[in-house]
Length: 125
Image (cartoon, rainbow, N blue to C red; front, top):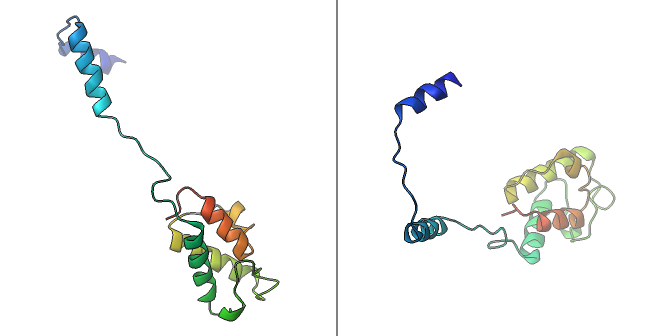
């Protein structure tokens, strides 16, 4: 607080009244400096997500690419264990440049769930 008071005692700012024209220019200047962002400009299509997820799963060493479909379950259909499941989720994180929290990653045990999670994630790219 003392530092603030010391600094403010040495600063002098001119005080004036704002006329209507100066106020309008000030408001217009503020509006020009605003930037608007949208998370939907470059959002992935579902077909892109499906294609990339299937490509990641097919490229996994323990998987027969002929068995991979959008509805395949990692453990039941492909015979993968939980460690393989974690490796696939990590590969998906790297491919789509996002971080999947552990709580959510534990739930992703099929291509269908991976596709749905990534498609609805706003930061997937």
